[in-house]
Figure 1 (tube, helix red, strand yellow):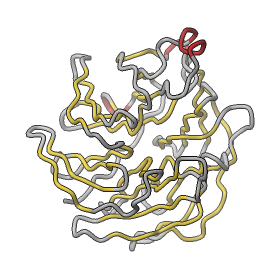
Figure 2 (cartoon, one colour; figure 1 turned 180 degrees about the vertical axis):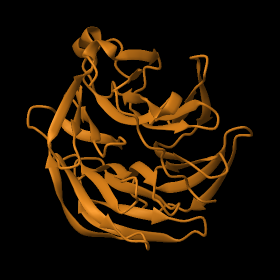
Figure 3 (cartoon, rainbow, N blue to C red; figure 1 turned 90 degrees about the vertical axis):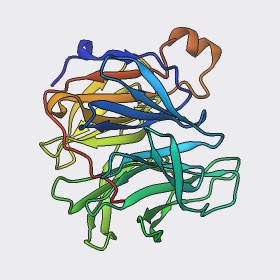
Figure 4 (cartoon, rainbow, N blue to C red; figure 1 turned 45 degrees about the vertical axis):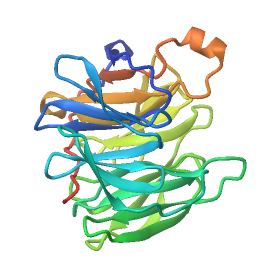
Length: 292
């Protein structure tokens, strides 16, 4: 397992709420978003970052398609982006008209469908839910009553589905049917009190689950049996999401946030919101892509 000293900053982006890192193996680049600023960024092979899309809406979830494009969410809509031309097309209208609602994290399932979590912001936080989308504009509610839906991941064989409820400080595990329905939902782990809340997740090739602890300043790794096997300290307090990338998928990239940090906290952690990476000693698996 890595030493904390292996953690290093790879890009200075000062994201308000960095999220949804996605590695493009064909291009050798990393896409990620800044939710509150409505931006999709790309980390190039030379280490530079560029903004490939800017929206007036909040961009929550991001994933690759089988044609090398990007599928993403704007508030409660789902859209496709062609990074080269900037062309955007919508595959789903807004599924909720509340200004306090938006899609949060998301990922593609083994059959190439896009799954993302609806969450509610504001003084009254209603329970969230998971929705599934296809290229034929099919929208399906697949899981309800999640206080704050967050990170999503599937096992390498595609039969096991993991999803995070940040407010419950819990990661759940479910059987995932070929029809794209979670069944036999059960608690996988409850993250430790005093280490913030679980956020984005990624799975490695040994079946280990890495989770970013928002306000906990660390990443935790649980083995396939749910036993805590490692803790990696971050240089900033709010890691948000992670994904494997780089050569042979041996690098774990981590987005972070500076959202709602006090002036004193920003003085203490000026690099909050930047992009980080380290090599955990275990490679990851390729993420599934959306079938256009």
